[in-house]
Image 1 (cartoon, rainbow, N blue to C red):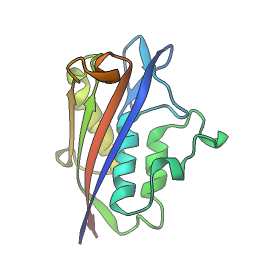
Image 2 (image 1 turned 45 degrees about the horizontal axis):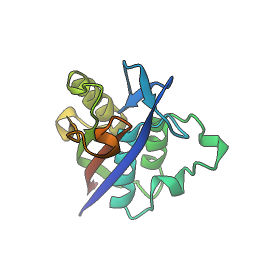
Image 3 (image 1 turned 30 degrees about the vertical axis):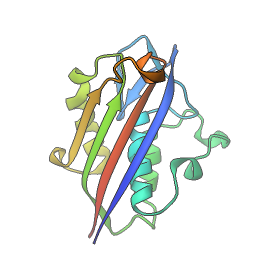
Image 4 (image 1 turned 60 degrees about the vertical axis):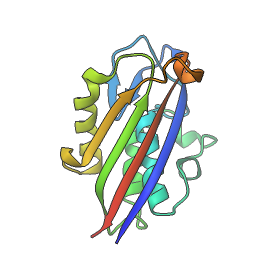
Length: 158
């Protein structure tokens, strides 16, 4: 049996915050604002996995009203979902992620992000795709005010 899930996340760009994507700190003078570390890539992957398993969304699992998750490492949140009894018996078939950002240029960081996401998901690198694109100057992402991520995962029963 296989299950497919889709996830999306967006966070505003702010000064004086680290930019974390896929568990990798990207050198830049700005970062993303959020209750946790605001890793839009891992948030989209987490939502895709939760969607594939019909388990709600990241906001239901880790509400921004709960002080326990302030500044949380998004990799740890994803691992919590993966270790949930409701996720046992499923393994990653593949994961495809697109990050949408005008700045910074992400292409040089994609190999490291793929490796990091693969490690978090306990998957070989050939099962993890990470792409970066711009929004062609359109909307908040295009104006450089936000960064977004889309993720699709295929889960296979073990």
